[in-house]
Image (cartoon, rainbow, N blue to C red; front, side, top):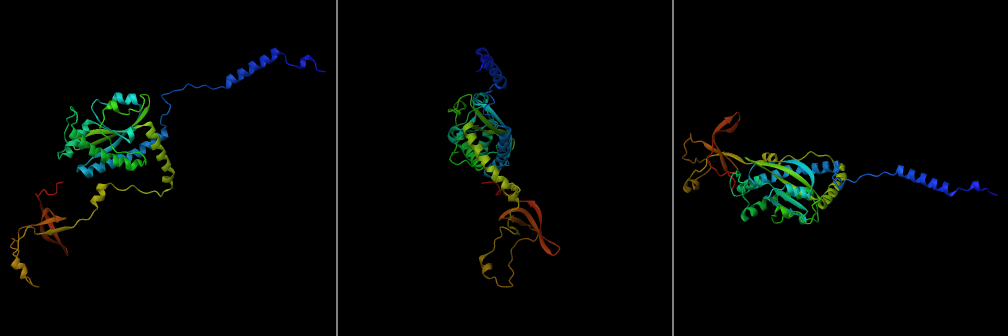
Length: 318
């Protein structure tokens, strides 16, 4: 038979439960929740996003260079993540902001860049520095064409099917991201731009839902990019244009010859051009005059010695 000492007393059971509870309390780990860090971009994602958008700067500069006939300089400035409330607080009362992708993306230009671009579109030099007034309806329409060109370039890099990146109408800062809460985060990708004496900035502002879709697309392409054969980047468009071939000729231009003299031509005939020997010809490229040219010889080859530059302004952009 067992003795009472073989069974634990109620006091002993209670003491054992208390020890187990103390052991569990010692092993339990409780951390404070920092809501400012929740949903924040990781360092790896930030580096990946930066590397993708650095390439946009050069492409946007080349696009505007070709369409507007001026040399543009554009470079990626920064990537930062702020709340919608913080972004709206730092946005100027008067700015040029256009929503895209159903209001999940905003393209914003500084007025210091907008007015020179509009002046350039209207045939000026793009030196306007009037940033004290708002845009007229006609100026907004002109600026809309620039936005289209920029977003076509951005869209070629993003490649996000199913999301329309067609720019909408210009909106005021208070109407940006109406569907988001003030505490939600937005990611701002800023660029600096300069042409002539004009300088300014533009930025892409991405809401978190759009950023998540974009990051999935970028990460999905990463393994494929590693398996591809490494290739050197294509040279800039300006360098490729300088390597193009063009027909060049040294000739006498604007000569008039009677039709009867042309009809009488036979093999061995001499056609009198009635042009003094000392009158220089012209060096033409693509049928357009560039320089005065005097016929000379260089070794066994015939050549042309260049003189004064042509004063004809037909090379200006139409």
